[in-house]
Image (cartoon, rainbow, N blue to C red; front, top):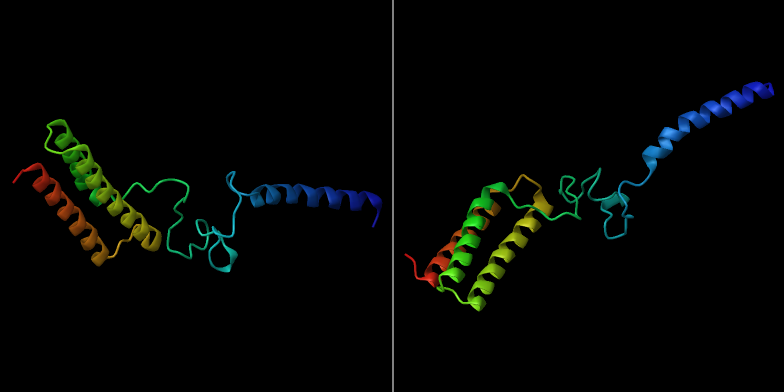
Length: 144
């Protein structure tokens, strides 16, 4: 091989390696830690999805399942209305909001386990918890 061919081959290899190196760079500005790695060393939010989280970005907050958002919003509105019309005191409202937040945490835990495909029994359990909380808010406010 002549030096000219060696130089051309090296330049060609460098031209092919540049896009591959750009793709291999870490996605985002956060380094992967051992806690973020799933099975087989894969990042649990990217390719292998070993926990079933369907690529959910763990740094963003979970918006909640769409089927529960209306009832959650209704409960939150009833609590705030109770504060406005003095049928709830601040401590009672904070307790009810904490219970609502606990249901939201349960939703997020189920999302990490199942993704958007929430099993029927989990769906019914969350629905029941929200309906019980709604009834508790109504009872506390003195509404039928």
